[in-house]
Amino acid sequence: MSSKDAAPKILKLPEVLDLNAANRLHEQVLAHKGEDIDIDATEVDRVGAQCVQVLLAAALSWRADDQILKVKQASDAFIKTLQLLGISDEALLPKEILK
Image (cartoon, rainbow, N blue to C red; front, side, top):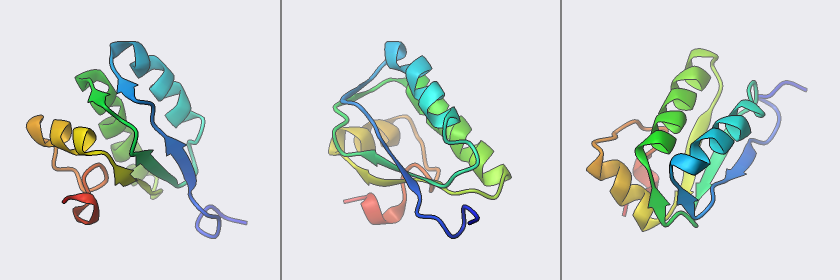
């Protein structure tokens, strides 16, 4: 079964995505390389720039490999932080999650 036929994997993000969480997030994302991923950011209370960089790099890498990595659900804190950082990548801030 190809990844296009399989349901996307769900990556649930922790409450705090700070510098200490960046390495773990990178490992979690790489563990799903070659698979479509839906990111659940509903429990995120705090987001650091390093974790945003990991997510942006992953979105670009997945796009280059013709895979899907997108934020399916997100907390207000996650959305507001990305907006404050000027992030407009559709994978990380799809129009359907903006309130």
